[in-house]
Length: 89
Image (tube, one colour):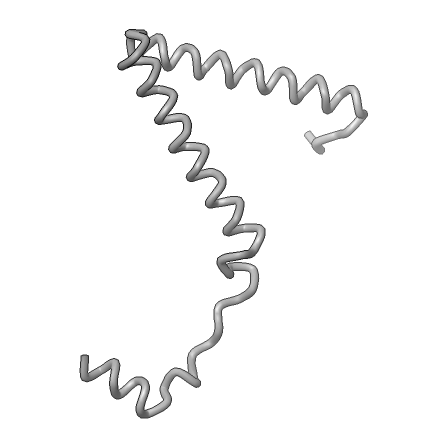
């Protein structure tokens, strides 16, 4: 507590470098990171629903997510080729 009071009273906060706008809470990077965390929570919720409510075994849920990943990659690849974009690979 004393260190914090000294930090304020001695105006040591003026010597601290501000956070770059790149790492600010409303930046694209942090918004993307937040979206990935929300996606992971949604995936966990769907996994729990599949295993607990529908009675699908855990390996079955993993297989469903694996197939969904493969098909989404296939669709993204086809769309990429349709528009003639090149990933640089």
